[in-house]
Length: 206
Image (tube, rainbow, N blue to C red; front, side, top):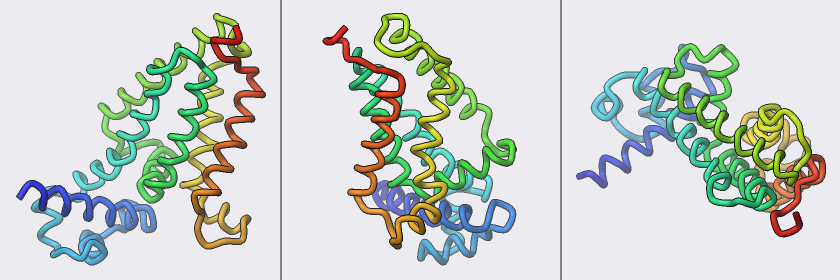
């Protein structure tokens, strides 16, 4: 039963991500989510209890990967390795959670009125942790000294745009859908911009 529940919850969250992304919170109807998920409407309330709870679940479905993306900063002493891995993971989140990312972006753009306080606190803590790590590398002379939070903002903008502005990117590339090669090329470009622009060096070279 737990396997069935997990499968149905995932189907509902994925369907809800798309409907919330396309119509916004206020205009989204649980009936439309149920239809897209190919499940009876009562299942929405059985698994999530309310539209608000389902919306939070959608936000959490992308926030959790975003929080986990900071792992390279904790696992690697070398900023070259950590930043390269971090940028790639961020791009893969845009690839794998495109609709949930749009929901998260829309929530932020509207002043985060429904973003739970505990999620805000965790995101804020992550920013402080990442900034401190970047500061450490700067103090070690492993990268150019600059305001670390603005560097993070630049990385977030350049990676999350592949989900949030997917239409514009596919239009510019003249294709209907991005493939793995596009994400590989994006990772190469963004990584080179950060590594070369910030003069990042490895611990071995220091």
